[in-house]
Image (cartoon, rainbow, N blue to C red; front, side):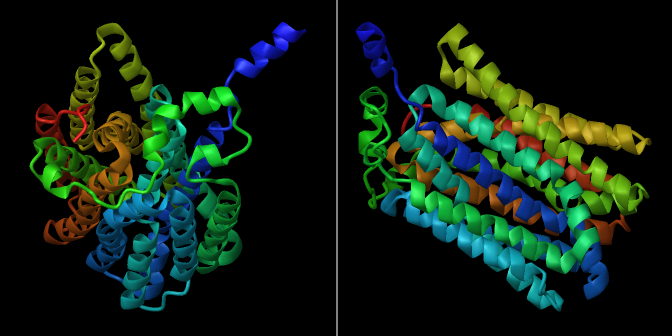
Length: 424
């Protein structure tokens, strides 16, 4: 009996996995709040009398504000710790999620969506910071895969959820319902989370020893080595590849339902169902990427080679399937092709965020914020460009896919010159 007790005491507790639980639930809430406007976009456009270009600007306002604030809030997480920063982020964006339902004009809608984007900025860099501090090295990339799978699947099922809520209370009150989800999360997270795992009394000695290499990462860091980063090609390549990734992906959470209704002539119910496919397939891409990357690392011992190989396939596959979708006349099969493009798109997610953690070290929040900022600049440009392309080409949707495919292909070049493992 004494031997059994000693063995049990030597096993690390699993308190650290609650950080993954918090990240997963917040990722789902994030994408419910973010994707809701893509489904309600046609209702908003009708009620507020918006043109295609104006709706594109409303979509883009979120992305521009998000991009502007993402790196500063990632820095705050490195400096102050994620506990207070994440709580403030979630409360802010939850309020402006609800406020979306109060919009009465184009200017009001753009302003509210910009404030929503400014609020949600920094969410994933700060969650990355919690992984950097709370998880051992071998579990960090796997946690990113699980979190992003959950985020995508949360977004995938959002159209069905939004349809049901809108049918019950209308699109304006639906945003108020979704805003309440974040408030609950913020309160529970603040009460439980600690910036330093050692401040949580439920970790046993074995789990504390497991996390000992992260001790210096938990301290506040305010002096970011910007000069050194700017001189490193890997910094710019990390940001550029995420720009290419996010540009193509933002179509799925902005214009996709409108494309299905106006470009494919589908009814509202069919639009909600088919809108699930890209984010559902994208969610599958994250654990598949984490699994294949882990297998390649065990086989070759080369983390950098594994990450590059996955990302080459990712960008090439995403571009190819987007172009292929324009050649398919059946809407369902076209959406399978677009869903496949999303699957390949998301193969890049775990390597990208894993690289941000490895290159950033104690500044992982700031560096991942810089990378995510670049991604959201691409994401903000996408719906704007689509709005103008539709106007100039008289609603030729194929052109929007060709442009996205071309941007995807630049990602291959960026990964060729990116060292995804050496700390900056």
